[in-house]
Length: 172
Image (cartoon, rainbow, N blue to C red; front, side, top):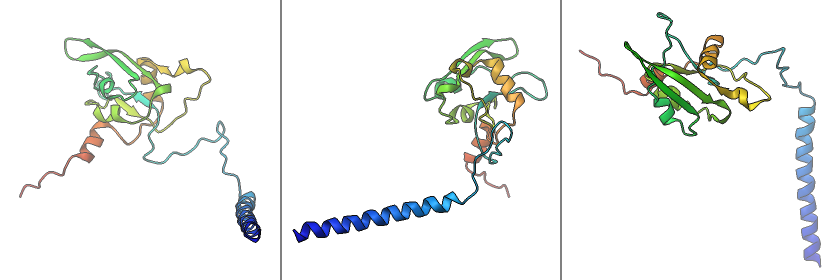
């Protein structure tokens, strides 16, 4: 009986110690200022290397869309949420349709890395909150609007490829 009594008291001591530690954490945090950001009024500042929502870009010099409809982003996408249909033209190819199911996107950035023309980029925002999933099925026009409306991330396909490439030998 003394053996059961000893285990009871040791378990009670462990329980009391655990409750004391958790209550200590609670009291320390109770006296701190809240870290809540009041979203619509105050916009969160994202880190420099933050990567969020996907968008399509235009060429700044010519004003043409950068997407050539090569479908590399569609092929590499793990959840297969990108669908591209190519339109062949005289001078170059274009994306006739470009759809992105953002509600199923994993934000893995593979589509950005593989794009040869830096047509698809990630923005420094995630502000696309909606109550209807159908609004997160983005077409080419909506993706271009997003690309013009928000600041792009630092990462583009060519920058990422240049970072991963081995350094070139210096000519003497």
